[in-house]
Length: 107
Image 1 (tube, rainbow, N blue to C red):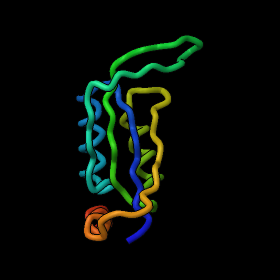
Image 2 (image 1 turned 90 degrees about the vertical axis):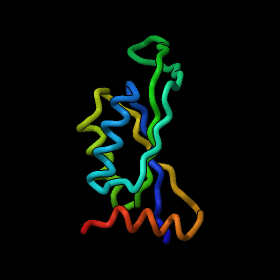
Image 3 (image 1 turned 60 degrees about the vertical axis):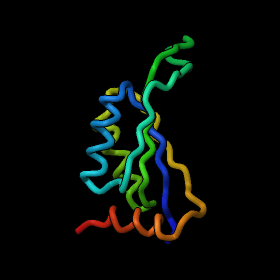
Image 4 (image 1 turned 135 degrees about the vertical axis):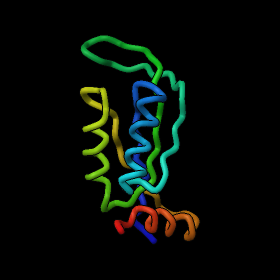
């Protein structure tokens, strides 16, 4: 099945990442969320170069759910302007892509 998306999200801490990730999976907005802890980030914020630790989430979902997923992340997130970007999945294991569709289907 086509129209699978990976959504890249940064969070302030592993705990926040787990809270957001669990909420997305429980709401069936994502079939799976991977969390990478202790990412070093260097970025511009409020006119200065900042540096800090963050966690990264990659949520596996469908194109139809991206808008709702983004809204849920923004609702739960501590950042004023969280990084939430969608990456298209061009191809992959058909069984895995079907699984994403199956697990995000609303009962």
